Amino acid sequence: GVSGLHFKMRAYVCSSVLTEYYLLYLANLYVDIYCKIKNGCIYITLLSRPFGATTHKPCSHRRHPAMSRPHAVLIPYPAQGHVTPLLHLAKVLHSRGFYVTFVNSEYNHRRLLRSRGEDSLAGLDDFQFETIPDGLPPIENEDVTQDVPALCTSFATHGAALFRDLLARVDDGRPPVSCVVTDGVMSFALEVAGERGVPALVFWTTSACGFMGYLHFFELIERGYVPLKDESCLTNGYLDTALDWVAGMPGIRLRDFPSFVRTTDRNDVMLNFDGGEAQNAHRAQGIILNTFDAVEQDVVDALRRIFPRVYTVGPLPAFAVTAARARPELDAIGGNLWKEDASCLRWLDDRQPGSVVYVNFGSITVMSPAHLAEFAWGLARCGRPFLWVIRPDLVAGDKAVLPEEFLAETKDRGIFLSWCPQEQVLGHPATGLFLTHSGWNSTLESICADVPMVCWPFFAEQTTNCRYACAEWGIGLEIDSDVRREEVARLVLEATDGEKGKDMRAKATMWKEKAEAAAEAGGTSTLGIDRLVAFLLGGTDDPKS
Image (cartoon, rainbow, N blue to C red; front, side, top):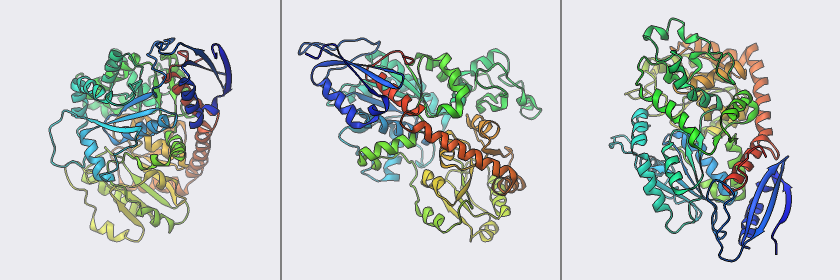
């Protein structure tokens, strides 16, 4: 009796959990639901079908029985900076009515249990955790980040078979898998999803500009820029070569590309792995990016000319918070691989607004003992209170040991932690500056918290993020890779007390407001999530309709 019934609603209304479940209720009436987004509205057509009839297949991917919830499987690359945004997206999809299976490596699963407690991965009835092995031999200390090239090689070799076995396991007693969202550097999952006839999208957890950089790795090789002719190219100005042919990235230099281009070896593992994974994005049915249009507009526009579907859905933490409000149990689900020390928040409560320098070089950065000492004495010289996160594995091949004289000199204005709740630290009124490695999650969280940055990129696309923070967005100052204490102190004081700092703070406020606008009802990222959900539910294949 409902055949051919049409109606429409504002797109932001479909963000609510109630609306999503209402659509599922309509599906239980044995009708097909067709969604089409146009001009900020979702147009819905209901077509009846006989009881027991198979579901119509209007799209290129499989539709599912009406009585089944959509079931999304998400698999991140097993490093902190990848797990966190994938988990945020998983919560968002869950809030839209999806059954979720989140896949960690066995190694990271054990780390999460140690950092968050034995019950932390119990999940919910409809939000489950699964594991796959990583294929690497055991290591003595399981609280360190694994060797990145070895991990990449192992998953490239064994990942498809491992994921195939996992999906067979997941089907038992759960709704059938209806879609796969895989990390951009775990593209083996695309092949397996294709075998099962379900849509698969890649989530590049980098910035859009970082992804564009990886996408050009092989072209840099073809044009003769990479590999470097010899080590002298690292210091003789060659890296300052301008590359004016990269779409959406005017003024970009070779040094601004992800750091894996700085090799003399054509067979370098990371150069070839990341270049290949970026090209594999062409095999996906869509690209998901944890960014918002305004902050990377030119690059996002260029990517949309290359790929048929690009979904900008950031800043994801804002959407994950909204999802947790709808179902508070989601708050207990976290992905921190180190135990967070929240005592620092009380320490911050006793500091003046905007006075504290927050120092955190992320989950993978390692440095020499000499560089650690230079950062320490730079913080001592600047005279500012500071909160410094020092991971147990921050110093390469050794324990991080700070000079006794430095500790004595700064004992009344410094605090040291092995890990902390970063979003809360950045959002605290006392935090005025972020000394960072320029990882994308950290950069985006800093933007959302209205906190300028002093940047010391370590590897990968951190160099690209640094360039944009400093040269494009006006919210960062870069420290030379061979760090010196005088420069650390000078840049910290310039960012906190100088004229440049005033301009940085004004621009940081502007970008925060743009990030908030993107996540509001009708904002670009809210609509991006709506489009993503509509596609995963079997809606329109035309993202521009």
